[in-house]
Image 1: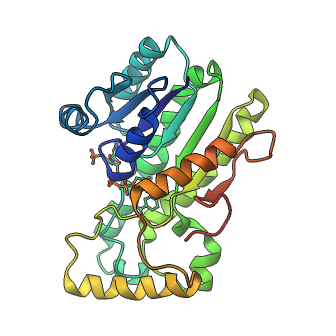
Image 2 (image 1 turned 30 degrees about the vertical axis):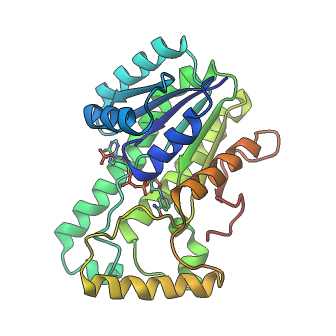
Length: 271
Ligand SMILES: NC(=O)c1ccc[n+]([C@@H]2O[C@H](COP(=O)([O-])OP(=O)(O)OC[C@H]3O[C@@H](n4cnc5c(N)ncnc54)[C@H](OP(=O)(O)O)[C@@H]3O)[C@@H](O)[C@H]2O)c1
């Protein structure tokens, strides 16, 4: 019997976390979303009868809404929280097709995207962690997991010249370090903070891409294939999320996983 708060359960991977974790009726699963009504509708249509699911409204950039979500979570769980899963993110697609130098041809738009990525993915999650810490410290599992991205690892970026995803990847790199800072503070209290990348998962992010953008994306996927010759394209959400959950279930402060950044394989192999 465990309690979970998962952000962004309206999205593809977030909903899959919600689905898999709430399969066990002894788990209490609280999903944070921006649009409560539409997510509750989706839950009632696709996960009907799961009374262990609770949906709360909170935008990561709305500090007061997050405070209310913490208070509402405490009422549901009795003031504790076992797992906090920071899954929500601003996933920029504007930066997916061109290198950072080309994005710089529209400096205002580049600045807007970078600040939005930083505001949601870094500052929003830092507030999320701070606000939920009192509940996590009273929880049993004491696990805080950030859903990160292998695009933020410097080594493959430089070895394979992956010049795209700049604003998004830079914000995820900052988030990885924020997670390590939280681990540095709370490891002594037995709280595991870690970042896990789910791999490249089919989530429809490029559904509206133009033929030219898709051609550019093909070039990126070719680089992914040279990095991981077994790579055949995005994986299914159900497989990726099963793997991510098994990574955090195996991880512990005692094993030295605090502050780490790993893939759905539990290592630095991102695909
Ligand atoms: N798909 C992949 O291949 C992949 C690879 C590596 C990492 N990831 C990571 O996996 C996580 C989930 O991504 P996904 O692929 O499932 O994308 P997604 O379907 O676009 O889901 C993103 C979620 O974040 C929420 N969100 C965005 N801005 C928010 C804000 N300001 N406040 C609160 N929630 C906000 C969205 O809510 P709304 O519905 O309200 O917009 C949505 O629920 C992200 O952290 C992403 O970086 C994904």
